[in-house]
Amino acid sequence: IILSCVMNKISVQNDVEFVRCDCCGLSEECTLSYIEAIRQRYGGKWICGLCEEAVKYEANHKQLISLDEAIARHLSFCTKIQKSGPPENATLHLIRAMSRVLRR
Image (cartoon, rainbow, N blue to C red; front, top):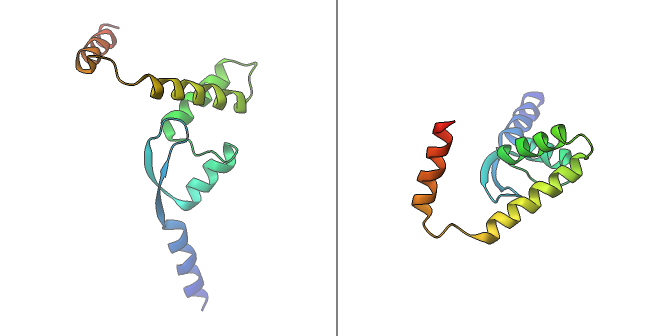
């Protein structure tokens, strides 16, 4: 009976689910326990790894803002980007952006 309970607990922890980032909309496949931990950390919001790093950077480098303010700023930024849509000539825009990155 104990082994059965342990196996059930392990299978529950290993269940995975697709979850969508509340900031950028990226979908990730994560364990339920990880999803719950991230939501607890960020006030009920699911934030993907990339957005999480951006929020941490914002909070650590702008010492006068809280984690909640950093999340709000990043969410606002992502919303503006999503509403603006892709550039008129997306391929050329990407090539130019990559050229600038490589020059640095």
